[in-house]
Image (cartoon, rainbow, N blue to C red; front, side, top):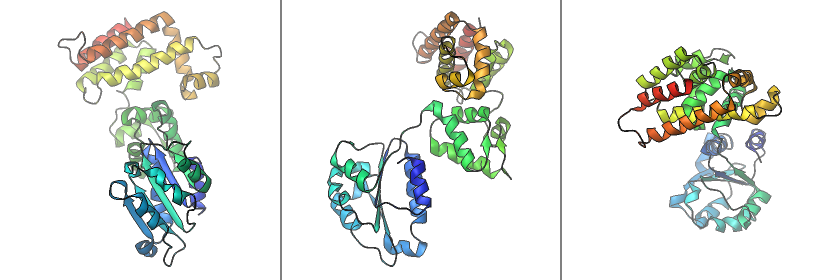
Length: 332
């Protein structure tokens, strides 16, 4: 089942006897577990029918014994196993997974690891319950994920604002949703979050950020690029060169790929480059300013300064100085 399918069933109170939640992205695992915590039992029922065990402090026998109990004055009992990745003999859960109690909802949080789906336990859980793999969302998928999340709240966010948040907050979904929820509180009615809203409420500059730098470079706007890179140098803790080189590398690599696309229709470009269709025209304009040969040179410059930032071929220049040199070489 997908995350969306699981939640559709949970909201309809269609519960399964086992939820085995595994994988690298803890956010989705926590969301499913929290929903079950909050909705399966009433506060009065929780005292006798909710049990939380931790992988470091329990074993399979205890889990099975607990899961085989019947609920008291409730339709279900909820048994949550947190940090289950610390249980060494997890495959021994097969004896329960083969014949789970329908009155028990067993939730296993198996974070940062996955079961071998070829083995018996995974097959039994797939047959009798829910086996969910929470996969890590890649950096280039974060802006679209932010947009989708905002839609679930009745609000929206501009592509520029979504990119700004993604660049600033990284791929930590819990951190991202926390900041978005703060923004939503400040909105009195359904509305669209813009870069100025992010600057006002979160503190990310809408004028001096990596995307404005990309735009300045794309347009070969030397004055604007220098203003932004000087700002980066004065605020190097928030704008380290490693972050700048990484973002610019992916940008110019996509620009290089654009030159060799056979189909340059907007939807095809967006799909091939994995960008929001809103930004396709900007890529088309930037491509006119940079030939494939020049883009290969720029990628070489970025690699050179990435190495210098790590101390290779650099004696004393700091992050700000290196970034200024790098932007100068890109533009000249």
